[in-house]
Image (cartoon, rainbow, N blue to C red; front, side, top):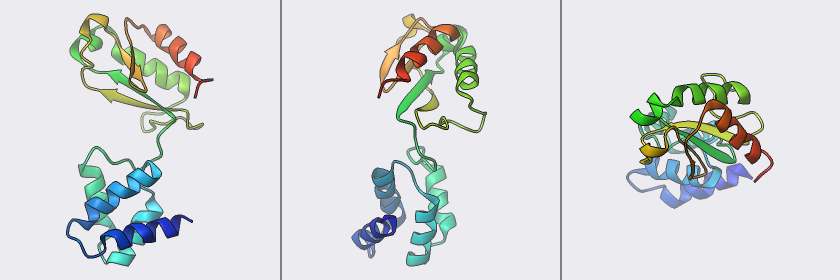
Length: 154
């Protein structure tokens, strides 16, 4: 099934310049991330080294090498949020969800945790967003209550 999808994507761009970028964009669109198997299969089919595909995926922030969770939690890292406890909120969320420093998606695939730039609502610091809905005036306990309420949603 997936191999057929890889073949369809390859046929679409086989003779075009910029093949690596466009193939990766379509893979991301199709799967929500760049599967390792797809990179090696495409590298073999195109005679483009897998390292070139990985070079592009690590250069552009838009690409993900791991599946995302159903809900994306972005913790504001702006100055006001930092001062109002964003680091403590992030640590608490990661601890309660069982995420290591290297992991950003929970084992059950429910949440992906990301740090973000200023959310632009500094008067509400500290803030986080879940699927682009912003929650402000948070403490670590308040952030956990919001996440707990979202665990059954979605």
